[in-house]
Each structure stands twice: as C-alpha cells, then as structure tokens.
Amino acid sequence: MYMKVRTSQFIIIFVLGIMMFGIKTNAQSISRSRIFTGGNLGLQFGTITFVDISPLVGYWFTDQLAGGIGATYMYYKDDRYSPSYKTDVYGGRVFGRYYPIDFLFGHAEYEILSYKAIAYNFPYTSERINSTNILVGGGYEQQLGEYSTFSIMVLWNLNDKPNSIYTNPIIRAGFNIGL
Image (tube, rainbow, N blue to C red; front, top):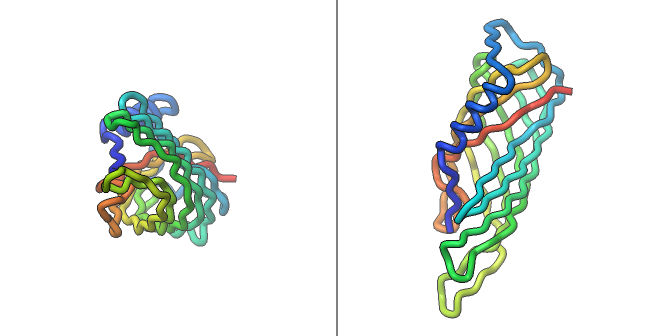
C-alpha cells in the first residue's frame, strides 16, 4: 500500500505560506539561536484522507550544520478498497542538515515508522509492521521573521520497499522557529 500526496498540494501550501508571510530575501548571514523547533503539517481529504503531524527539535552545532530529532503521527484512510484501508502511522527520526549557503541545505535522516500493512493473501489480513527509512535530499529555506523560517524539501527514500509508506520523491513543507 503506497501513500502518495500530490506535488500540486505542496505547491499550494508553499504559495499560501509565501503569501501569508511575504518574501524577505536576506543575502547576509542569518543570526540563529542554537535551539529550534518546527515540523510539518500535511492534510488531504477526499477518497484518500491523510493527516500528518511531524514536530521536530533541532540544534545548531555550527552556523552551517544542524541536527535533531522528530516524531511523526499520520492518519491514512483509503476508500478505494472495500473495506476501507486505514491505519495510524507513528514513529521517530534523527536528522542532519548542512547549509552551504544560508537558504539552501542538504538533508539526511534515519526514520522508523510503525503502521498496519495489508497482507495480500486470502483471507485479507493486516498486521502492524516497522519500517526503517533512510531519506536524503535537499531543500530551500525562506526567512519569515527574525526567528522563523519556512522550508520545502525534496527527499528520496534509499530503503524503498514494496510496503514502503512513501513513494519517491517525497516532498515536505514546514516551519521552524528559533528559541
């Protein structure tokens, strides 16, 4: 079972984020607090219902290197099947980011998720499985104020399997707030 959130939905979220906060470009070095919080929020409703809440806490080791931990909770329901397939997905991740310039970054993360996977045998059954994912990619970060940023990333799951919860590429959008 694959969950796929359309690229157009993330583009809409990105545009709305820019419209809400305005664009502030800053070519100079951005002063940052050492600890930051943030995360992602994803919503999709219809035949496929998807809710993603993924908070994170990070630390700036240097002006260019940050890392941290995060939690993930997703609700997924697909009405294209009879009976409907639905699952609660939860897990955690450890991540690192490298910023060669202020607004572009490389991202790597190790994630473990637990979810109910469908076994395609008769009678159809489902069991909760743990899935490990190694995600790599990059992103863009836009300064929104003195202490907050909006980011969008494109990631690839290097551990892609038939029961993977993701389809490549993975697009994430979110906010970070320095403390």
